[in-house]
Amino acid sequence: MEKEYEFIAIEKDNFNVANSRYDFKKMNIDKLRERTNSLVQENEKMKKFINFRVDNMFGKVETQYIELQKKKELTSQNKQKFEETIIELDDLKNKEIQKTW
Image: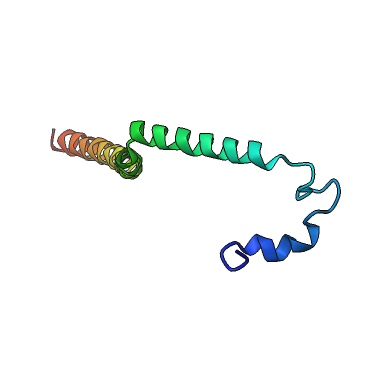
């Protein structure tokens, strides 16, 4: 088990030490096994109702949303530049018209 779970080798010195989290004398192993089994069963039931593909789809949609927000900002900046250029050109046109009259 030590190879499978690294924490065992690290926490080995704390096993069966009074008032530690590994004080096995205070624990009721049968109740813990029952609780573990009930949680595993509950987890299996919940897996039937959860669509894991939705989580992946959410990530993709979120990425697309961020990209679209960036494109929207860029478009807004370009629109402002175009409007400024149109105003400048309109002013130049009006000046030229005034010169010719």
